[in-house]
Amino acid sequence: MSVKAAANHITDWKALVEMRSKSGFCDAFDLAVEESADWIVYLDLSDMWHHWSVAVDAAAAYDGIRKHLDAETRATVDDFARLLFWETKPIGINDLGCNPKNPNEMESFAINASPETVAAKAVQGRKVEAVLDRLRSPFDATSRHEKSWMQSFDEFRDYVLTWVNIFKTAAKKGYGIVITIA
Image (cartoon, rainbow, N blue to C red; front, side, top):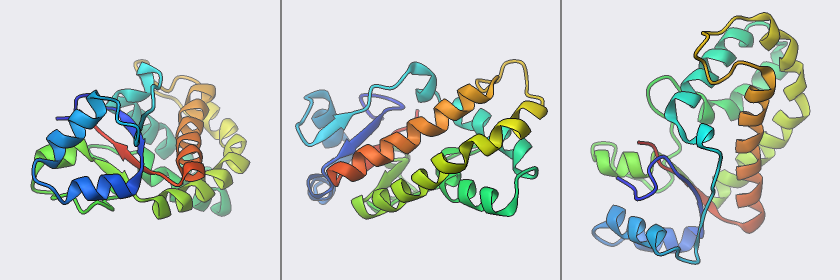
């Protein structure tokens, strides 16, 4: 399990791929994170965005409003949201080729995206930014469980925009992304 459980990092992909070829990959990555290696940028997000149940609540909120969106808006958000909203496990980007049968790898590198994937997701994210306010009315019209992390559209919007900005930041640097779950 990663040192910074449920953490998010943008990484120099070349360094990460080089490390991937060595044995003890997860431990080596943990050590690099712990030692604040210069090729890894830890994204210190609000505690709210680290918790896996936020993704589940975001999925439930989006599922409730999805059917009320026009086809173009739904397609735009769906492309980006598949990465962020999941019920029991991430819907994966596994550009590193982590072994799905190795729980240590799949928790430490639940989502790992190469710079090319990051760039494509950043483009999708910009499109989502442009249509995100179209989700406000359907969001406000649907009910949510009282213990949901997503009680208001603004919370939902902030969650989505946090991820859009992560992808834009990584793309600007030409970096990949590693998302760890606990």
